[in-house]
Image 1 (cartoon, rainbow, N blue to C red):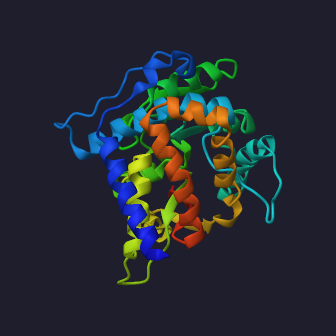
Image 2: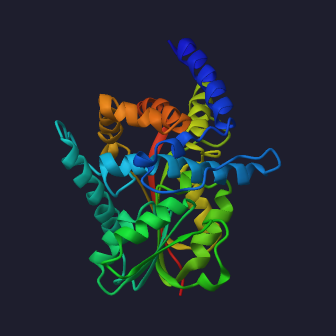
Length: 333
């Protein structure tokens, strides 16, 4: 019943929030799993809420990226599936992740081949490398909060030579990047941004005149004027937030408005929720493999919270609450 689900969500929220602040990061105890020497992130009570969130995000991806790469490979995002896709093996799901990149690029309708690209929230550079290969004359700069991800992305891209990766906050981009990128690419990083208006500000100002912004992100459903999310919906998102280090969500309509207010043109939106439906069940299937379950537990509390959130993401999608939204916009010349 809804009442039982609601009680579960609040209990899970309490557990997730409590463990989020515990500072437990036992990754360093398992160097073979981590495969790299990384700094353990500690959350200080003196830090601002945004700083705590960013430190949590960096620690989360530092903890879990090696395991994700081991099981799923270089892409840390949803796959794109044709209707009624069923019975897929892991390799087919990995192929769907590559298809997602091409599908977004095609949907964005680039006027010409981009020469300069910035990948906001690049992970270990899977999309950056794919974009660089698709557009041979391009140079891609990827940014992430995780030093481990930036280091691994650089290592994987050494042979390509046209990708650079930096540890950089997407809400504090240098002014020297203004008006410099023909394509500003954000594939599933916007959900981590605590200040959505400032995030869009940075997407717009780093885009070159005549260039495109392509934003793909998790959103909640659009709301009618005066409508609010229900108590149950807010509870579900609260647990996911505590598990995945997410701030308050917004809708695709909210993003459309933010881009319009900043003078962007040819703003388009899409809802690909149905096209990503097989992804989370596939992630859960790999997670419940006994060997992967043990590996997940060894990453510490972030691994445990991630397992909880996997199920809740499926619930959110089935409720019609969570949407996989796209927005593309052109900067006036």
